[in-house]
Every structure is written in structure tokens, then in C-alpha cells.
Length: 86
Image (cartoon, rainbow, N blue to C red; front, side, top):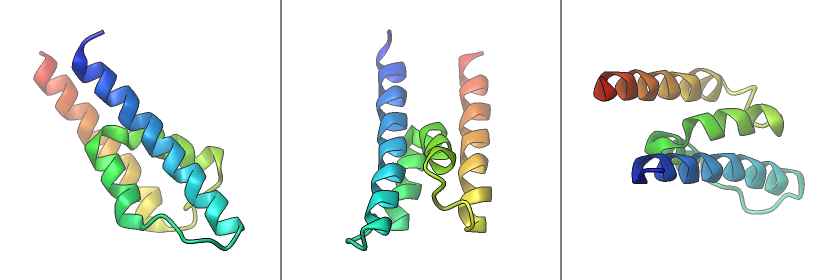
């Protein structure tokens, strides 16, 4: 596996785990993960993991900016990946 693929896998795992962590902290009324961190992980390559985490943990699915923003980031990243791998 090349370095880029390992990076993407790690970032997606981080994005997924951050959604789960924030959901857990929301339920237990603890300090929350800031939304800019959640979006930052998605922007840095973890958009698929963050999107999966939204629906696995049923978290942030009522916020339109997550419902629209995370898939939009994923679509742009996929388009860039296709463009640069050709």
C-alpha cells in the first residue's frame, strides 16, 4: 500500500471515531468535540469516515451543514482523486 492510501485510511478512521466520541460526549454531557475539528478531519481526507460516523452513531444528522457539507467534501475529494490519478 502506498503512503497516500495509508493516510486516507487513517484520516477516515479518525473522522469516524471523532463522530462517535462527540456523540458519546453529547449523551454524557461532557466537553464536546468542536464542529471545526469534525469538519477539519473531513477536509483533511476523513470525509468518508465522518459521513459513515454520522449515520452509524446517528450524530449531526439534523444539522443541514453536516448533512450537506460532509458529502459535498467527499464528492470534491473523489473528483480530485479521479482527476489526479488519470
